[in-house]
Amino acid sequence: MSYFAIATWKFSLKPVQAAVKLLKSGKSCLDAVELIARMTEDDPTEPSVGYAGWPNLHGEVELDAAIMDGRTLRVGAVAGVKGFRHPISIARRVLTDTEYNLLVGTGAELFALDKGFRKEILFTGQSILDWRRRMKNRKLNDGHDTLGTVCIDRKGNLAAANSTSGLPLKHPGRVGDSPITGAGFYADNEVGAAAATGVGEEITKCCLSYKAVELIRRGMHPQDAAETAVRNAHRRLRKYKLRVGNMALVCCDKKGNYGGAANHGLFCYTVASDRIKPVLIKARPVR
Image (tube, rainbow, N blue to C red; front, side, top):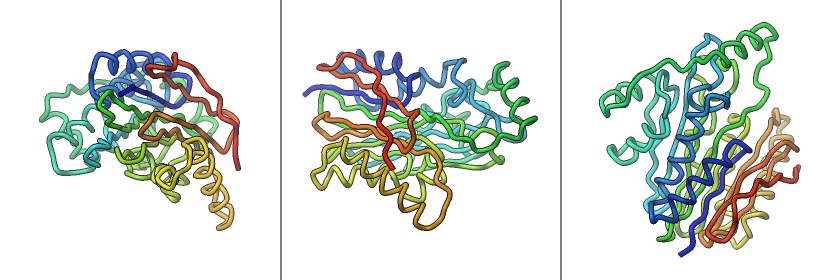
């Protein structure tokens, strides 16, 4: 069986390169999506995920992450976590060590400490300057670059994962789509998998990732499924006169066919496999 990895945004290029090497060595898709997220969480230049994530209105970095096993449909997710660099790894321990889907806030932090994770300061110099600038301009809710990723391993298993610091200057406790099953991510070995990025309120209303996977189940190519899911969500929100923010997703079927789409012109994603050298693809906007 071939192996495959896809992830959102330009900053995922190096993590995806590392992930396909891991998959080539025989490691699992869960290991691969966790690696992609962890490398992004460690990046001090990326202000939307992990260590350098955007602070909330009170100047605190709150992180959300999730991981899903397409073999079992089991999920592990955390939301509103403060003081931990790698929420994706905490989420994976929720998946492997509990029967829960989602832990939030203080409960998630206590769980992380119990599992041996170390607390640290996440508010970097870069994010402090950005926070001060945004507070001065009160520039709220202007989109977000969540790390979303999907991988297939040599055994044909699929996994999906997300990691994010949420909207810049969000209200403390706000949670978007990233840790919500079916909205920010979904994986099913029988069909395929998807992961989303953008304004979580809009993505959650439309269950964007689940919709894309279900379109693949009905026989659509992943590219068509991605475009259809985004287009339908965009038009449905407009129909009800709701705000329509930036939305995008990546997806694949169980054979490694893939696609990506967005309702704006800024979205790009990285793809790599045993047959495809790591490449950055710019998505054509659909509405």
